[in-house]
Image (cartoon, one colour):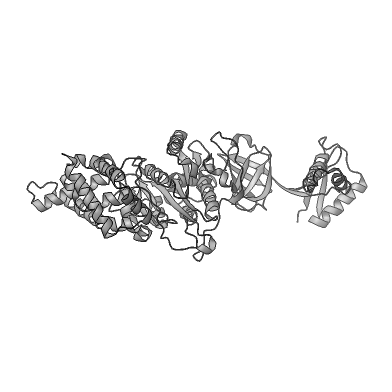
Length: 575
């Protein structure tokens, strides 16, 4: 069996007596070992002993660093520190400590291969001598591989790599509210450093079944179509899916804007987006006063794949900090398609076996372990919640593709945005047939639930009838009325961007529409009539509006009053 080799660096060669002591120490710890001396003027008073990746630093700098660590532990003595310093220095005895150090073997596309560091653990942060940090991703028998968090040009072959014994994480705290940070928690908004309160690991286990409560508290989006037919509950995971440029981010942004004054902290995670797009979104949030309760975690398209990979986990860790305080959190992942692509890039560079569409075999677990962390915690665990709105981009509306089907099976429902509806002017372009919420009415306020009534059924009938009658020339009066009613409903469901509706506005519009009161209005004027009606209610019926908003119920008396006021207004609207 080949003996291990130890190398001692010093300016003067050790004498026989010193060399004998070195061998005694090394043999006791490592067994049979060979000692080699190398001259180095870097250690004029002391030595540096290397045994594989263990380093024993008995140089001046090494002893000075030990003294500094000792002094850092000196307690505060109300200004009279001299006696304590004297005692600390007198009692100081330098120790020989082993450091675990690896050597960079190769650097390719942000992936570093490191030898002599086989004690590192998966997910551990490594510190390079150049100051760059990385995270362990592959552990092999004779080397480890890590991904770099930037600074690839600074890492060179032969460079030393140090273990930190720290699992990758992110600083968290209340001071992050209103800030824009990168995937490592560093501020990138130019407003100075952020004072953190705690440090959370990027990856934490999801809450167990026992630690959760049922999802039954509504998270209102302010979007009439969603709140009335596909309600989202606090702690739910609702997927927003559709082709490029169909309004997916707009829905998420409106939902964030609608949380103003509702004691809900929002986190927007940008994955692989253009910096200009993120800047525009942040400006919108600022103008609407939403940045006060929002945190933006951004990894730009120009960032390394490693940062795009960790960004959603970083956002989730920040959300968990607030959730464990008993607060409600809304987190948007925009988007997980780019996240999967970034992970595929990393996996291929790490020599992991490609599977379907070249994605690695654990790409499902990539997203399941992220989205499962969203939950409604039980009262015993603080009662906080984290609601996830992951976004996925499809190609040619193909929801049966690999990544979309994976995430559909993980989430509790999906809002499907259709390109044809979007280009036809129906915005938000939500497909009523393919969209679903698996939580359903349990997460809906009683007022909206009662007001929505047969809305979804009426729309389904209209869409079906529209297909069958598009080539018909002679229609009976009943069919014509149903088509007019259906077209009116589609107009009612159109909604301007960055203009979420309040609870009472949604209830008033739904009650009026489902009572067929808008059928007397010209199709092109229905939307303007709706806006005028809501303004009329706000000015003439403030008590009624406030009652609906606070009590969140729709009694027969309230419904009758809404119908009465709406009918009187619509009758005189065109006059």
